[in-house]
Amino acid sequence: MGPPMFEVVELDLSGQWHTPTLGEIAELLVFYDRVDLKAPLMRIYDLLPDDPSDMAFLRTLIEEGRVTLALDQLPLGEVAHELGLIDWIGPTNPEGVRDVFRSAYPTVRPPPSRMRGRSDEVSGKAWINDWERIMARTYDPYQTVEDYPERLIDHAAKRMPLIAEPQFLAAALEAFGDGEPVDMRKALASVRAYGAGFEGRDLVGLKIDGRYGGSQMLEFISQADALLTAVESPSLDTYTGPDFDRWTRRLVAGSAKKAGVREDLDAFRISVAARSSVATAIDTGTRRFQDIEELIEAREPLAKVVRNRPTDQTITEAYFEAVTNQSWINSGLGKVVRFSFFSGLGVVTGALLTPVVGAAVGISLNGLDSFVLDKIIKGNACSTFVNEKLKPFASQA
View 1 (cartoon, rainbow, N blue to C red):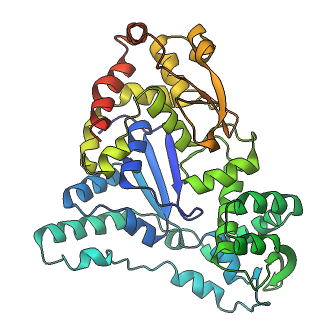
View 2 (view 1 turned 180 degrees about the vertical axis):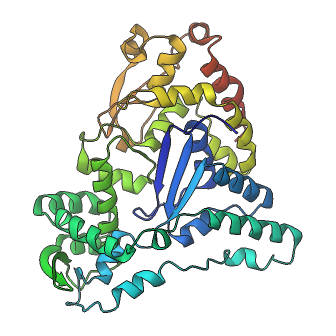
View 3 (view 1 turned 180 degrees about the horizontal axis):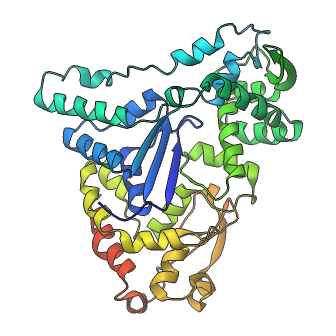
């Protein structure tokens, strides 16, 4: 079902506290050849559709390689805590930590509790059968990677010193804590690096005032780890939650080459798709998850544009360049309607994201002659897919 896989978007739900909807994943599948999802088991439970037909379609997508699942039960914050690298009530002695890591990756993974009560129904049996087939294709690093606990410890040993660097810590905590409750900001302001050890190894930990510490510190460390991964791999497309975007964009400013996937798709919806959204159509129940099969089958003209765009070009820019056979951003029309704004303000009349993170170029098409635009793009295969398939599907929301 479809072309070879080239363009991949990653959703790492272990390092950020955001669970996308099934509709969001469906929308990503329209634009990207493959969606790689890494998450704890409980977050995977939250994503699964209850409808047996939708579940069967998700299983088909996984078996065909359009969606991949990987378990990540232990983000860096959890690992650091188990290793005693977060000292908020005094030093710890993490004995048996490898057993703790092992127990986090169960070899038997039952279906979510909401579906176990339906196991006697025909539809329930079909759902659970699909669940078992999906789990059989889910990547489990503990069962695959040799000495996975040691891999986790090595990663913590390398990453914690970077997170504990005074310059990074000061900037990251300020950005991460923006908008947090007063107690959280006090907790973050109290963080200091300290020397720690584990099994004779010198490690770096974080000390926090015990009056304010809590799960937010685990979240901060995990998200800082995800941020550093994104900075190390700037060409990787990642789909992140709004809160994660907010603080990471502030921290890295213009250092990343690509704007976030979420902002990229928002810009496309506004500037090209008349604000219609595949995700909204599915999440509101207007469309079913399995209905995206018709879009997946017909998406190749748009997919080719997404695959072939330069690393610093957004989907919207690539689309207009493809349908007009010229560089939209350098065209006279583009120069007339361009203006800049910061995406964090959330005031968008239409947007083309620039390579500068946190900034965008907006396009307001309201004052333009729609007949002229229609004439420009008439007959283009990519615009035909958008206008005859994508818009009608999404506009029913």
